[in-house]
Length: 258
Length: 245
Ligand SMILES: Nc1ncnc2c1ncn2[C@@H]1O[C@H](COP(=O)(O)OP(=O)(O)OP(=O)(O)O)[C@@H](O)[C@H]1O
Ligand SMILES: [Mg+2]
Image (tube, rainbow over all chains, first blue to last red; front, side, top):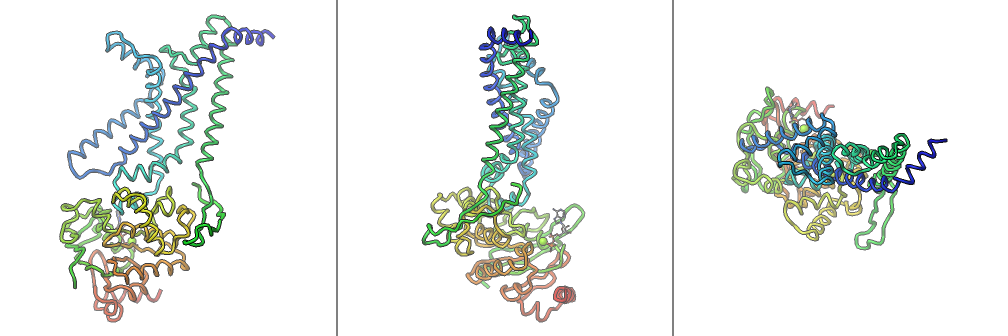
């Protein structure tokens, strides 16, 4: 079969180069997802702040909320490829032709884009936590910020982990659009192999296989982490206070969904 | 009576068109246990939530040691001094029993971990929950959760604790354990406002009973007076309805 020999040819000649693109693909998607998560959590905390009494502060909050909403709408409502072009070339346009360094530019684009999605995910995560815990925290004098840090965010993180993992996997695939500004990631090298070898089908098949291996592995790893974070279903009952070695171990069946 | 800790003056609260509290006036002295009874929808929870500023009063004022809680006090400091125990427990799901009783101390009162832990253990012991310090709220029964919630409030060393139907969400066999804790607390001199449907508790434990009806305090007095010789028709009919059901 000529396809196999095509693949063998492309692989032997361009394999190492294509593989070297994995580094940037993974780097940009990991950092981009993490920064996106930070953006999303930050927006979530701001958005759920109780309405201030001071009219000035209330006005400021309105404006900030409007900006966050606009950010979410715009970045979810336009393709990342177009965002990449606009940010990259917009920067160059406004800085007399000086362009952004490619990798940081790629990370910035993925972060901002992911941040818009995760902002919405976090919003859902916060809403899903019952009002009672906020009131419990308020009733002992905790501030909004400290309630978020100690009580709400840890629970939100657990709840949204599957969605954030999903964003990460999406990012591994979607970093491929960054080739439009010339970021040397996996797709970029596959495309250049295709161009130079004229074996287009074989080149992209190789890229496809690598993308799949990446997302498949990452998905398994994230599942594993999610399982770990689910935590223990048991707790230790101390039978005697004075003698803490006198423990009774209980194995309570987990019933709650958490 | 000794000095009043909390004074409620002409408190009003409306939700949109719905006037829930029309004119509430009462005060509570140090060490007093006041039970608030009344039919469903009469505004008992709303009144209690206004005292803790979980609801913002529409009118009137609430004084804590003579200071207006909305204008003269820092809300966080004030709330730390006025604990609240909810019908639905409202424990923090991500923290274990010990953590639930420590987080307020460390984040609001600025106590160090060791002090906070010692304090938490002291009160968890008082409510009989020391064996369960490692359990998460979802692993506890309702009665146990409520005892932890009481310990969480106590660990802040509050001057007053507000209870909003603390036993209404509990299975009958767990009501007793929570009421016992509350009774002991009352006897130890804690200042308490207790919204409750437990008439036996109101009668046996409280120093004063307030009967709320339709956004007003309809009648108040010692348990003997209110239960034994109610003056108002509304009180009589509420009590007879309640005792006959
Ligand atoms: N957040 C709210 N928004 C609008 N209406 C409310 C709100 N909270 C309470 N109400 C209304 O206020 C009235 C009094 O409610 P409240 O919960 O204070 O009664 P309650 O005396 O505690 O009753 P129960 O014994 O059933 O707990 C009810 O008609 C209720 O519908
Ligand atoms: Mg109520």
